[in-house]
Amino acid sequence: MKKQVLPTQHIPSVLSYFNANAYSPDLLAEDLAQLPDDDLRELRIEMELWIENDGVTADFLNGFTSLGFSDDRKSRLFFETIFDHIFNGKEEPEATAFL
Image 1 (cartoon, one colour):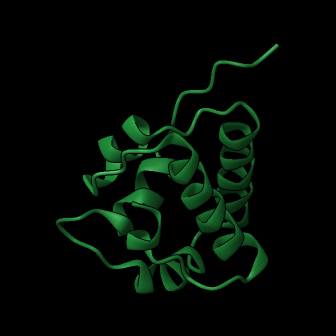
Image 2 (tube, rainbow, N blue to C red):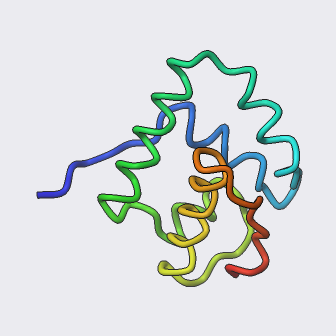
């Protein structure tokens, strides 16, 4: 059974770097490096829950980014790419590739 997951301060904070009105994903890694380990751990757990529970939709991401996602599958892939960027050292995602 899927758990109901509500975003805490961490998800909106991370997604704010990808907001259409203040797009600055290049600053994300630098700012996350300043977070306490407990906050990073909470962010990881929260993002994993959103991914595992299929909670990431176009509407969800548009609510935080205003980028105009129209496809839930691409929205989820974008969110997973952000996760991989933060926690697995992958390349910074380019939002337009997922719109």
